[in-house]
Amino acid sequence: MITFVRNVSLAVALCAVLAGCGGTSGSGTSGGARPAAPERPAGAAAPSPAGTPPAMAPGPGGLTPVFARGPATAGKTVALTFDADMTADQGPRAARGERFDNPALIDTLRRLKVDATVFMTGRWAEEYPDQARAIGNDPRFEIANHSYSHHAFKAPCYGLPTLARPDMAADVRRAFDAFRTAGARNVVPYFRFPGGCHDDEALRALATTRVTAVQWDVVGGDAFATDADAVAEQVLAGVTPGSLVVLHCTRSAAPVTERAIRRIVPELRERGYRFVKVSELMATTGRDPRADLR
Image (tube, rainbow, N blue to C red; front, side, top):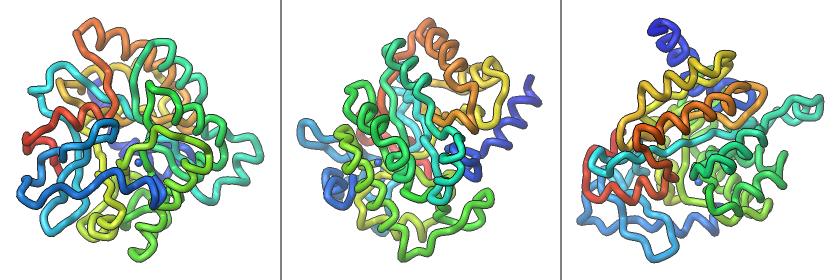
């Protein structure tokens, strides 16, 4: 089992290259995440007005900040995140019947009363606007940004096409525009790099979007998996207080995720864990420097 888990972890690497496998406001909505005052350290969450999500303070030199997990001192909280991937050129595949959505997974999260964050590409929101709107208007969920095109922000990145630096900020804003067009309201100013691939140049390119980049500390290993129990075991073995788990919300590339969730959720609850959105996990960070794990 240890060998299997390691192999899955390596194989997934957020399986950014996959069609519909992963792993948050147009230019008008991203304004909710204001840069923090300069005297705050890079690892501290910026205070937010009531009703707006927290944001991380900029990194050194004003780089887009990176959040990877909450502090252990936050208690037994865990954030489940789901990448809703669809690359810009996959429309023909969707037209032929390939499914990049997973409504059964969303229904299960609702039935189990699990709060979660969905990192969505703009192309996914365009393909499934009704689902994007339903997810984005459900108080249990928040939509975060996974780019519009699902192209890489650093090369190489698992075979993904690479965006030019001058196009990166526009790609992120275009995704926010797609969420707004779909009618989603619970959109947060967080961004997940396709494949998790980034460098300082990419962080610098996104500074004007005022997003917080969100990574993870637990890889779910659900990409291309056929054994739901193996996925569940990998998550259950990795979660610690404050963990941020990356999973997927795409049937074609992550077909067993919903079944894995049916095991993960009750077992973590038995251990005393509470499920939170990324925004709530980030709000617990305060000045704990462990949250910024670039």
